[in-house]
Image (tube, rainbow, N blue to C red):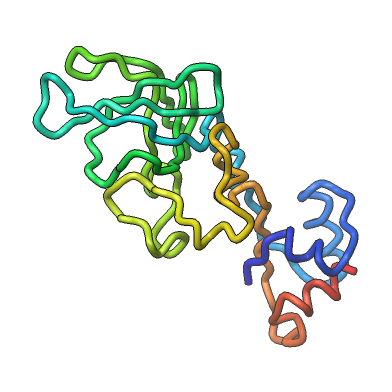
Length: 192
């Protein structure tokens, strides 16, 4: 059973590293198989707001976007995605960023036009439509206000935090003699 560590923190004060938590839970009889932090594979990826979209001068399917990434000036990014409009918020991998699977993003030129990063799809962030059911599977991930009852994240917000990838997920092996641990409340009680 997988449980975000943030959920366990709703039931108990946790002041230790994920590895220490895993060791302590295993010693208490709730065996931890593994833990992972998706944010560890993502760096220099922020939320960007599309300010302008113009057709690429040398391509029928590409567009040139001006993107507000929370810096003094917008960055220019070339993309082939067709699901974007002005005002959209989406994960933006800036120059010298890293994505899951070790993929590195740097600035470059696409058909002669400078691109200072990349707008990210679900797959490029290691996500699926199970994580964001409203997202277009083969398009750029555009944030939806329904996922953010307190308001959409501001441009420049780290994407890992905005997408909920900054929480550690702990996987427990629930043995047949511990059916009482088949729920978040139960594992929260064990954590306490």
